Image 1 (tube, rainbow, N blue to C red):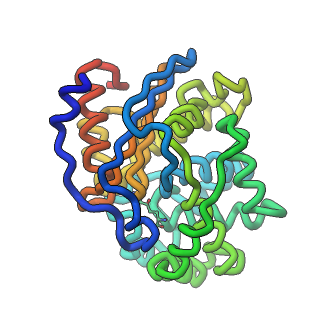
Image 2 (tube, helix red, strand yellow):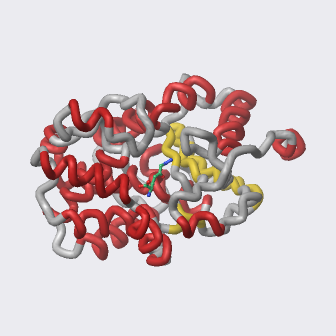
Length: 295
Ligand code: DON
């Protein structure tokens, strides 16, 4: 299988709109798979930290859903957007209610909720991430957060538009600062695969035995990953890979096979939709060859 993986092309471009991400070695490549009974398989640079970017939106959703419960869905939808992750278009005619929690606008609303509900949002969010993943070393990368802040004009436009529609309740700078920090979290493929295992096990982390979310919430988070985790490429990912998944512009992807395993892949070159080109190909190859997908 390793030999066959070498033949998968590695095309596309490293994200450049966040200046710090330009410095990543485009040839990096890692995979880690963890089963719910803690069998681990890895390949390549699976122990290198990288910027998880929008993969973090899954954890933001888990925490905001815990805090807000069903009221969350009054401020953000659960439908695929069919638009790029940072699109402004729908947001205007849908009156400031983002289609789902995984496009940037949706995650900004979740961050607004965290700012309203938590006393020390940045500190409490990173503590939540460490607890969920059973790993006390996970942290923000202030350099990446600062770099995105300096160039984050589109996110500023999204949040201002939502503020005008009354769907952002807190100070814009505070919410953006939390959002940029959450996107800057660095993890390895191994840490990601192990950290997100609760979604493969009905909301309880099988390694730490910590209940992160209840069974219903775990099902719903997976459902939203299935439908919205890849923006305007969600259909393609579902069609080719057949697992709930979430990508980030750092080139990482997390995918969940509920009841079985979670897998993280990292390959920084992105396709035109902002998703890891090789990462998607590898996951397609894996679920096709093993016949292990939800379909
Ligand atoms: O807000 C942004 O544009 C980035 N911090 C995250 C975008 C992202 O990862 C989209 N995923 N493929």
